[in-house]
Image: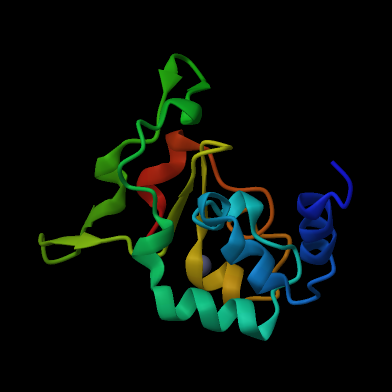
Length: 136
Ligand SMILES: [Zn+2]
C-alpha cells in the first residue's frame, strides 16, 4: 500500500514536545517511577500530584523483581507499605513507589519536589531491604 498512514501517525507522535503527553500515552510505564523522566517538568509534576501517590505505588505486584541476596535472599513485601508509628498505631508509607521494572523503591515527594539527585530515593532506587526498618 502507498501512503503508509500508520508511519505518518508515528512520526507525528515523536514530534510532540510535551513530555507528559508522551508518557500518558504509555499508561503502563507512567506507573513505574523507573520510567519517569530525569528532569521533572512542571506539567509532569502537576499530573502526578493530581493522580496522588497511591497510583504509583504498584501495591499489587508480586515483588519478584525485588529479590536481593544478602546473608539470605530478601524481598520487598506488601507490609513494607505500612509502618508502626511511635504510638503503636499502623500508618501508611504513602511516599513509597515500587518500581516493577527494577524491584526497588523511590520516594514520591522527593522525586517530584527535591533537587537531591544523589539520593537513592530519587536517582537509582533504594533496595537495601536489610535497612528497611529504619525508614520513616
Ligand atoms: Zn522523600
